[in-house]
Structure formats: C-alpha cells, structure tokens
Length: 437
Image (cartoon, rainbow, N blue to C red; front, side):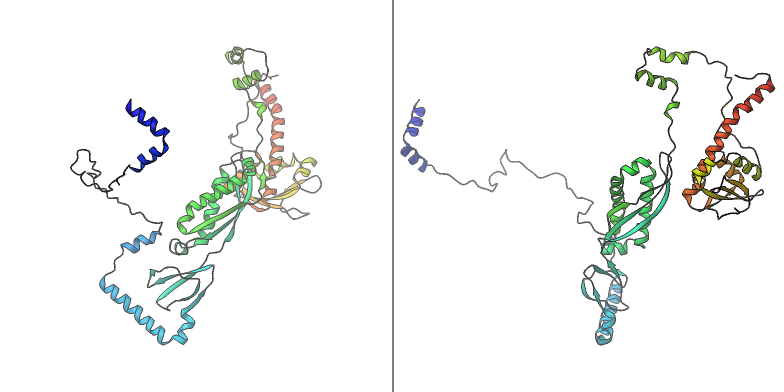
C-alpha cells in the first residue's frame, strides 16, 4: 500500500520525480568474461572437433593456376632461368637502338598481349606500350571486341516430319585473354562447331510450329547452352539469332478422320451422341465377319525386280497436265548398278515426257543419282526422298527443294495403284471362284 502511494505522489509531483531520477546511479557492464570461467553457468563454445577443409576457397582461377602453384622447379633450373633472363636483358640494353624495333610493342585499348617467357605463362599486358624480349618471350595478341560468325544453314528433320533449312548468327567476345590462349587450341573453329552442334540438337527436338513460334526462346536457350561450354575458354556468347527457315517439304498431315475403335466412338459420344457408354463397347464384342475386302498392301512388302524401262513406263502412265503444272521441273535420273543408265523426266514443257538419255529440249533442273532399287522404293512410297538424301542413298545435283517435289509423282503413283487394286482383286476372285461385292 505504501509503494502504491509513493508512485502516485511521484506522478502528481514532477519536481520530486526529477530529483529521484537524478539520484539513480548506473554502472557500466563489463565486456570481459572475468570471473565466469569457474562459474557453473559459463558456456564453453570450444568444439571438440578440429575442422580442416580439403578445399581452398578463392576467386575463380584458370585451370593452369593450379599447375603453376604445384610446380616447384629445382635450384639448378632457377639458376639457369635467371641467368638466361639477365643475359637477354643485357643484350637488349646494349643493342637498344636496334633491338627496340623488335622489343617494343604497342597494344590498343581493345587488345591484350599474352606472353610466354621460356614457356611459362605471364600476366596479360596492355594496353599501351609493352616490352617483349626477343627469343626469350613468345607472345600472342588477343582482340577483346565482339565478333560474329554464321552457322551455315543446316538441313534437318523436325519431330513432326518436316524438312527445314535454317542457320544462325552467333555474336561472342573474349572475356579472359589468358584462357582463350591457354585453354583451347583453335578458338574460332571450336566456337563454330559448338554453335552448329547446339543448334542441331535444339531444333531437331522440336516441331516446325515450335521453331516458328518460339524463336526467341530457342535463341536464348542456345546462348545459355553455349555459354556453359565456353565459360572455361574465356569466351562469352552475347547474342544468338536464327535465320529465316526454308521449308523443304511440309510435315505429313494427320488424318483425324481415321480414328477408329473405342477412342473414336468415345469422342463421338462426348461430342453429343445419344448412345450410352456400354454401347460403346458393343461393336467390339461382336465377332468380325469374314473379310471379303482385298488385303491392304504392306509398306514393307518386297518390290518386284523390274528394269529401268519398266519403272519409267509406270511413271509415263501417270503423267498429266495437272502434274506438269504442280511440279514444273525437269529431272535426270542416273541409275547406278548393273542395269544402270540415264533417264529424264520432263514435267515442265508441254504435256510431260519420259525418255532415255538427256532431255532434248532443255537443261535439267535437278540431277538425281541412285540405285535402281532405291529409286523404285522412292517412287513407290516406301522410301521418302528426303530420308534417302539424308542417308546418302540419293545424291542431288541442283536445287534440293525442287528435288523434293518428287513427292507429287509418288502421290500420283500411289493413286494409280489404289485405282488398279479393285481390278486385280476381281481377277483373283474369278480364279478362285468367288468374286467379292
């Protein structure tokens, strides 16, 4: 009760509160731990373990720095080295008016000079005037400015089956003059090969639509991939630009109307059909009737052995004015092998023509070289012309895009084969005594 009364009096009388505050004394706390060593409350921060790391932490250094640190020359090597260095400098000093023309070098602001003295790497020198001792020093000038190179246009197949002709432009600069000289033998050639390899790996794993729509992302990713490899070379890739792509042939169209079975019926059901879900499985529970339709031809069915004249005759039968308008080119086929020869296919002049030898009226647009079997496989659709070209089975002399227009001839031959199948099946049915409807 007394303490509460005193507190109330202090609050009501400010002068008394001030006098009581002036009588308070504060003592400075000691910053030392004296007297706590033997106390039971003292905390010992000493660890019973001794930590010694096997790594040395420092700024990123070139790989040759470790070799420099580990190398300890013998006393005789040091004596010989310093003797040669002193004698070389004395000779340079004595013959200075003449030796100055060979020893004094001028380095531009954007350049550095990497010097090897008796095979040992020195610190880069420049810019400005530097001194290089003849015979004693070997040196190389390094340009630090941004430079560029073109990745030659490459022909590649995308994931959706399209053939694309595309290249790139890469901008890079040297960030470490010593690494660019000591870490790699041919810097320019290595960066070019790396850019071509990274571009091929990125584009071959994408479709044609992704290449057209995600060019900026592909360029950025290609730059990061190259930088991860060139960092140890002292090179930084600053920019990558893809060139305009040329489509050699479009990807094959996906025919979604051929979806059959349960998935096709389920899609129809979800699209608004009125049948119940168990009815989707009903057609699969009914045993199939006897197949009276002609069997489908297999893509891997072996082709009959024919002569080049017979193959050209089959092409002659499908030539029409529409095919000439669609293709508009003259081809020369050089067939190698025992039954080889030279034949031409004119789909440019008049109504089209097929013959032996060279075209009589004009020069060919494309010359194709292949064996008889490979040419027969291409014309019958078992081997894609571009796949034959990429595998080396087809050699093209001329415009590759024009050569890929042979797909139009292949389509015509397929249509002719499909048209002739019912007649062949009717003949087979009449022989066995049963003609299917």
